Image (cartoon, rainbow, N blue to C red; front, top):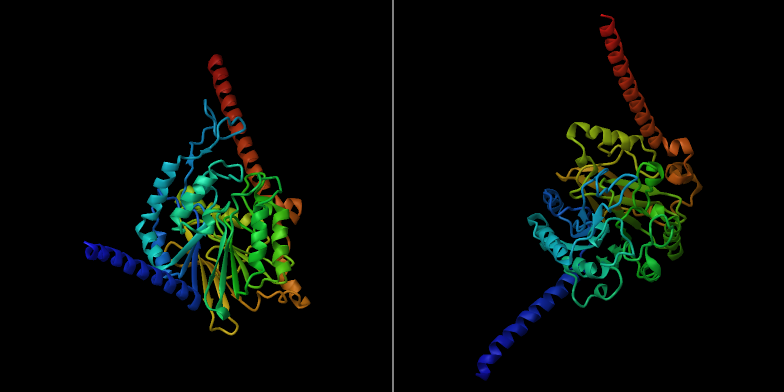
Length: 456
């Protein structure tokens, strides 16, 4: 009996050893093999078809980064302007979004994880990421949300975070990773812009004191040729400054003190090679800011969404209007070049972000892309790593070239900044006047007919 009992024990020991050495070899491979392909994306409604995973798998990324809204965990009520329960309009008496239960969140994560295309990616690439509002549990929610502790556990389960991971013991899902050998190293810093975020319009904190201290330590940490900072909301672009008062989007630009602090921290730590990636807005764009006091241009590649997209809301014949409005809306940070599929240099259909690194080029180059559902390039720009050094914009000869990306949206003059709102209100006024004219015309016609009938 004693000899027989040793067999399963030895087998268990062998299997455990194989798993341990497999984990070590995987970690060693991440550290030794240069990273050349990174994919990322956001806004993946688990209940809708997700054909884009085929294109992502063809790109064959070594790392995939979730940027939030990895599932849509909250419940959206129908838009109702009138009635007992009104979810939109000035007389709204009920919220448009409500959180779902823990069991429902688990089911939605399970559905997302079981997607065949995502499952294939998960087996061959390192999958990491953060969350945004809909997988955090409630649209536009911040630190006040009372289910964040439970939902943090569920989100980390979805990412297969080890049970002993520090992320399971801290308040928030922020973390960092190193990939590649010492002379070709990529650091990925994953921020949590939800757990500690103060209310919108407060100009308070996004990260909270603890996460700010952690971020400073990370930026002062070991050198890396490239540092990718993943934020669920846009860092560089602040379109709300030009789309308001029609509608507003979440971004670091709506917390100007926090954004200024972020740029200052990059400058203080002398961190080179910083590139931001973001999601949330349901369209893709590449933005650039040259006057952030860090001494080199800061790029932000926004990929949104893997499923949800702004053009999807409109019938196909009307989608050109979305592109026209993107083109008409003033922007100061967007990268515009001949690589854009549309004149606006935005992409409002399903997309994913791609970063390709050519370490063998002299100097090394980084290609930043937004790719469509077929894997074709919709937006792109090439950046030399020599540009992403603190000295690259201190040469006075570059000032004129970079002026296009130096003016913040809030600094635009009134008529330029609000021209979208002026256009929309003008169209509404014209339509209203036309409707009034039509009504008056109909009334006068009926009156004339009645008067003529009486005469007859």
